[in-house]
Length: 219
Image 1 (cartoon, rainbow, N blue to C red):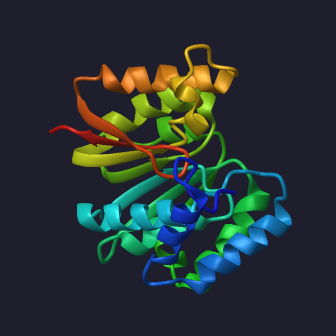
Image 2 (cartoon, one colour):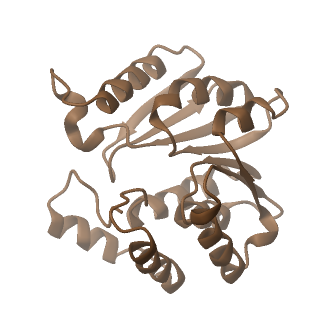
Image 3 (tube, rainbow, N blue to C red):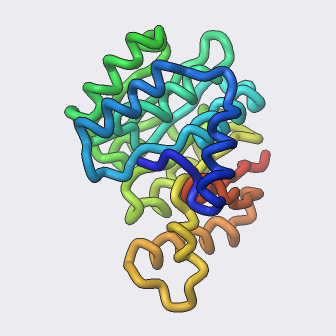
C-alpha cells in the first residue's frame, strides 16, 4: 500500500499528505487494518491520491460513478464522499474477502446506502451494463492486462464530459525505460499509447502516487 507518492522526495510527499484536510481517522484506521489483513499487497491508493479523487468527483458534480478494483475500500470511500446528493457508486471486484472489509467501513462511514458492490470479473460486469452513457466518473485500479478492454467498455458508457481516472499508469517511473523490465510495464505503456491516440477523449497523466491518468470523454 502506498502511503506517499513515488515521484517526490519522501519528506515532501509526507508533508503534502499531512496537509490534507479534513483528516479522516476512519481512513487512517482502514489503512492500518489493511496492512494487517493484506501484508505484502501493494494495492491501496495513497492518501493524497484519495483526496484528489474526492475533489475530482466533487468538481465534476458526479451523480453516478463506477470503480473497477475496490480491494478493502479506501478509494470507494473517497469517491462516494465526493458524490453529489443522491449520487451512487458501483464497485466492481472479484474478492469477497477484501470487499468484506470494505463493506464494514462503508457502514461505519455512513455510505452503504450509496454504494453497490458487484462481485465477478470486471469485464463481465461492464459488458452486462446498459450501453448508454450513464456514468459521470470512473476509477480504474484493477487487473492491468484488461485495462484497454475495460477502457473501451467504459468510454461509451460515460456522459459527455465524464472523467475516467486510471491508476498506476507510470509504473514507478519504469514506463519511461526504453527497455521495460516487466510485462506489466509493457502493458501499461500500450494502454497509455491507446488513450493518447483516442480522438474521443482528452487526457493527461499526473505524477501522483504511481501515476494517475485523467481522461475526459468529449461530448
